[in-house]
Amino acid sequence: DSSAMDTAAQAGRRGSSEVRAEGLMRGACAALATASALLMGLDTQTETVLLIRKKATVKDVHALWVLTAAVGAAAGYHLLHLLRCLYLGRFAHNPCRNSRALAWAFLLLDKGCAYVTFAATVAAAQACLIALDGAQALQWNKVCNIFTRFCQQVAGSLVCGGLAAAGTALLSALSARNLFRLYPSLSRPRPHPHRSSSTK
Image (spheres, rainbow, N blue to C red):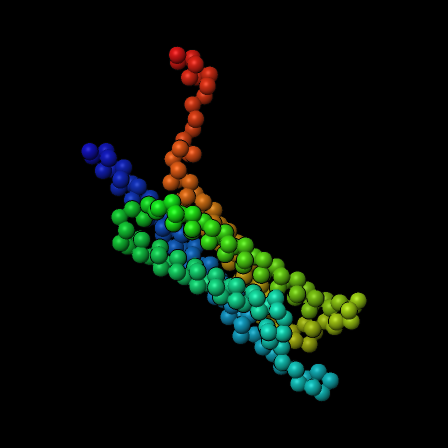
């Protein structure tokens, strides 16, 4: 009985440390995604071009607006998971014990969040390359030569969005690990056929 209690206590401590680590990663991803959304969403600059006042905003480029929405949703998603980790670490007796349905849901949501954030960041980066270098075939000028501060703020948002996507990918790997723990038959090593025959 004492050995069983010690094993349960060790499992509980291990589960609490894992929940704490996940909470730190969720908080970091939420902070990065929030920073990306704020840098992009609040980015405006007004300059005079050929005696005409022009204002640059993220709504001028659809890919930038999509990235703002994507990282904003990712920030809210990670914040909800952070609250879940805080609750499990404080009140749950066995934080790592989840149902298989919840484990599958967390894995799919983490993967979807990582894919959407990464795709939106890459699409926005491609649009920024056109703004940075221009497109001579289409007679598009280099926009960043005019709206320099706007482009610099967009670059900072892209860096934060890329880091948030990478962190979410790591969290999806952690979710996959927690899911496979609920399938003990998959993690147990199968007996070697030669060994089983020799024992007979």
